[in-house]
Image (tube, rainbow over all chains, first blue to last red; front, top):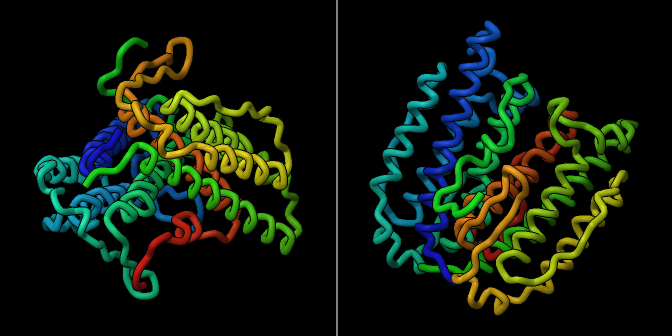
Length: 174
Length: 174
């Protein structure tokens, strides 16, 4: 069985960003019950030199948008990384999902001949498209979605693994 | 460009488990410098009702082995989940990698007709093979590798994003 690089990326990113936005909904609902300031969640991190929750959302968004743009040669939208509220972080997810919805499966035609250059400085890399997807884009995307979840769990937000995994599309019996 | 379900899973899991084992090496080296007890890392978690570092490694291993077995109809080895030391956790990664090395690309022939049932009780699901891979196995695998990393970072282990991403195979210029 084979799948296209489109199938292995665009729906995966869209689904992950939708789940990430739902995790933010649940964190906001919890904060409104407990009186916690949402800003303490936005600025929370697991180690002093790790990114905040806002940073995790921004990098998940970037990994998804570049994951699509670099494999197709399309232009990715520019986002300012200036989100400081939950509404803005959800909007960042929504804008990224909206961009992904414009990427057609046909855009991936010829992506087998495409090599991708990413990163910068001492961490500038060139990889064949499929290797870029499976060795960087997917691991990096899930890193940031998971770390956002881990930050919320560490702050006591009552989300669980089912919230991270999200609803299954095309599911048969349960 | 299309890739097989083998390409999208077995090398990805093998690479992730190799990286996970290397993260454990770095944590052990750090502990030997600082005098930290390794058992405090093994038992560390980010929230009282989350899995420990050992649990994260065990679930990453399970997700990988079942990810291969369920898409091919092969039998997955049984592991006892009794690891309490870093050596045992690395051995768990190694045993899982050894199993994955026995799974041939040809085993995936016909996987397009395969539906996968996983989970249990109220969380028992049936999904077509590709959906199982992209909606459960890959997100869940990276969840556990990332959370193992996040636990180590939270404990002050000096690993970084490059350690999580690991060396790129087939890389051109950097």
